[in-house]
Every structure is written in structure tokens, then in C-alpha cells.
Image 1 (tube, helix red, strand yellow):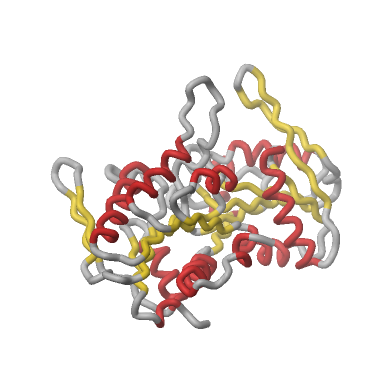
Image 2 (spheres, one colour):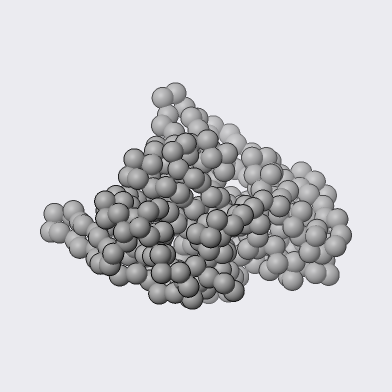
Length: 335
């Protein structure tokens, strides 16, 4: 593979807590991570700066904005660090700065659901623009249209997780009768595009279904499967797994509707709260997530045994290489 790492005018940085993922990206590119300093002060403030020249260079700063269960590692802390670093890189003369964000915080809050609600996803993009970012590479955000509409002063590159998961799923269900399932009507396009990839890989047509959520008094009580899943392997496609409650309700509804097996694929495994218990539910047979968020909250046992972590590093390396060389990004972002 011809890589961006062969060029002296590229610099690849990894912010704290994203260094393990970034090291995989750098290895794919055949380059090393550039040196930088992150310094914490006693009052909780910090500074961050590159330790090598970035003047005139094409700079990529990798920072996954998921929260951790430690002080100073919230999504807010990580976002602030990345924004300040982008500003420092621009001040140091970088020709272009691309924020590489494997997990984008606040992406779920992309519309108003109550009076005077904030549209936080839009504000986050505005912060990247204000800090001086020229481009943003993100992976399977909740609403890609909201991302693209918000990004007016920078180039947005949205990588779809189906390019990562389709080959793995095809291998798992090669001999099965398959239905691709959206956990709600809003995710239908994501599921449909994944189904298209799977149909090409398997060279046959697949069934489609979705889950209708039952809600009463603002409380979710269950789901009902809409579509033919009888005797099939049902594959639930979603953008993320938080507590796992939605996924378990979906799996139970699909099994109740006659599904033989239930697999799930979600780009981001936040795995918060009772996710350990949820993923261990017998209705759920296997779960695929990427390594954009490491499964540090998940213990051992049944849940861990069902989990397959697929690295997104190769697809991010490809995106960085294509963006640097001015090559088309459509193989990663489109059909």
C-alpha cells in the first residue's frame, strides 16, 4: 500500500487515551506518531502542544471523544483538549489540520425534541470550525445529514461502518437465511445500505425488517418486529450500543417473531450501565463493535464471550491517505 507516511509533509498526532487506536492507524500508514506534550495543572486546566515543527505540513490529530470513568477524561475534557490542540497547530503554521474523531461526542443530540432544546451536535461542529480545523473525519455518526448540514466552514468526511462490518457479517451468515433489521424506523437507511453490501457479498437477496418500539408515558417497555424473520438469522444494525437495553428488547422481539439467531453490529460500543448484563441475555447470540471505543467497561463472562471487536484502524488509515493525496473518498463514504 502506498501510504501517507512516506511523505515528509504529513504529521499524525494522537491525543491521550486515543494513542492505542492511533498507533494502529500509524502502523497501517507505515509511519510514526508525531511527538506532542499534554500537561495538566493542579486546578484542572491543561496545555497541549506539538513537540516538532508542523509548519507547512498536512496535520492529522486523532482524538476519540468518548467518556471514561476517571476525572479529567469526560467527553468535555477530551473535546476541549482536541480543540485547543487544533488551535495550537494552526498557530504553529500547519498548512491543513484535520480532526480525526473515531467517536464524536454529542452526535446523538441532532434535533430539538422539546421546546428550547439545544442542537448540541451543531454546536460541536461550530467549535471545530472556530478552533481552525480545516476538515473532520468521523465514523458512523448518529445522523450524517445533520453532520453535513452543520459543517459549513470545514470539510466533513463521514466513514460508514458498513464497509467495516459487511465482510465479517457475510462470513458469519454465509449459509443462513438472513434478515437485516433496523432497531427503529430512523435507522432504516443505515440498515438498507448494510443490506446492499451483504447482498453483493453473498450474491443473493436478503429480507428486511425493523422494530417498532412500544412507549407509554415516556417509558420504553418493549419492541415488536415488523417483517418476516421466521427461521432466519436476524442482523440488527445500529450506530452505537450504550446500556444495551434497546438491543436486548430488539433481540427478544426477533426471537419471539421466530428468528433462529440474532446478531448485532454497532459502530461504537459505549457499553455503559448494565451493558454487561444486557449483552449476556440469551436472546442475543453475538455482537460486533469497532475499536473506536475500547470495551473497558465490560467484564468477563457471557457478555465478553459474545463480543467481537473489529478494528477500524485500516479504514481510518485509508481515509487519511486519500485525503492527503487528494484521492476520492467515495469508496469509504458511499456505495
